[in-house]
Image (cartoon, rainbow, N blue to C red; front, side, top):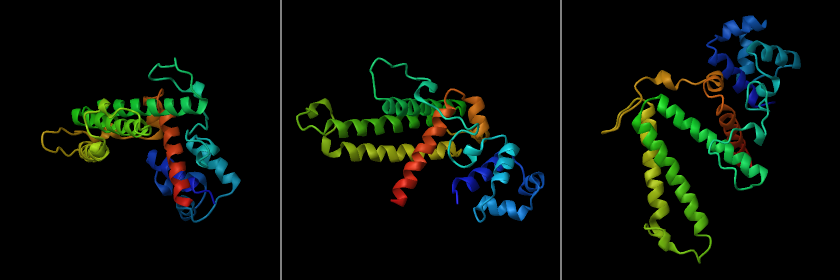
Length: 230
């Protein structure tokens, strides 16, 4: 049984704020049967797959989790705008593809933080991302013992743990600020509706970034599922 189909059809219905009873009536099936489909208890036939894809205006491939974009589009490296404009260094295609997805997804995070009008959210997201990149760079740098540690002012023995501690604080502050909870002198998101997101809103509001983010989500979750099922 396809594990993505139940989750995605339930997501599409809820994003459109359609009751399960109404959707079932529109689709010509019982509410109980639709509930079974959405919970993954029963598997639908091909005819219903096409019917519900038409109902929500999405592709069958999307409903089956074969593509992260509702329209069923698959992207290549040429389809993704290069947000940082740095094309001077030739890279293997897969590296360049992942780099663009990451760059554009980060840009979208900052756009969301700015839309939320929260200084705390912007500052904490910046610190979180910078410190994680810092940690990764030090790991790569430390791979060669000849690399001089004088490049850094924080000793190697404590750098990773110290950075991780601050990252944990960043994450806590991001959760608080985005949930509308001001901590200390930090501000917070006043209106949670500014962070209301659906696949349609992502595509319409952030057309240059949404494709990258949706693909990043799929790649990341495929990796999680693979590791958990290994």
